[in-house]
Length: 350
Image 1 (cartoon, helix red, strand yellow):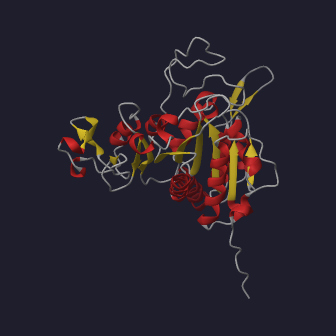
Image 2 (cartoon, helix red, strand yellow):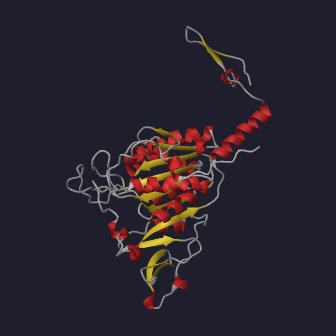
Image 3 (cartoon, helix red, strand yellow):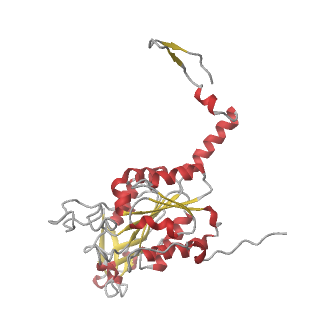
């Protein structure tokens, strides 16, 4: 007799904890998208682990009815890496913010991505420090006036997608909190990717940085200011689908079909190109010169770290047998240090 597997639904991933973000916060939309997307993956609930650092986004594990860790500032990638290497069978997700991930946690993040660990990172980007009440963050625009930069920030901001591509991430994407269908589709693609997946989500902080993305999300400008990247399709945008983006020499440029161009002149998007050059160029597209690209910038195959590590361990066990901690400690070259400080070479054990 077989026991039917339970068909999971959104409510199965909703914890009994009261969701305590500010009313109207974009985090609610991201939480809803994840809780809706997880059941569609067909993965047993007990296989999910959600890890976070510090910040508004890092309350995420409390609201997900899964295993999880609310860790320390910037260290979520390191803790998630340990989980994934020890238990490659688990689905490990990191919820982090632009401050947590790109400031104190920047070094951990880039090494997670370059190693291609099978961890999925959702980076909430509201271009502000929300939990600590409105200081500028690593993604705040130059000139941003905040409590910590009353005369305007003189820092140049990180471009999160460029950073991820530069670190060698094999899956890089962007979506927006209010683009619910698009967000779920992108997160699903990230979940199905074998290796590191990095998804930047533009998220509104209506208390400390309200309207940060209004230039591209308002209904009257959305079609003209947003470029949806679709694999195998030309880069066409606009309310009337009358504009596009082409590769002209070594630069991307916007073209208008009324000036004699057409979709056939546009760059056909290829997210699977192993060369990240075009993806990097797309990541640099910013308003007002360009529409803001959303969707998958890069999705390429590469062996994941945890699979390679497990294979290496199995190979050594097959060659040398199951070891013990004592054998490990007494392996290699040994020395004895006497009470008088003299050092005597010991036996070589392997």
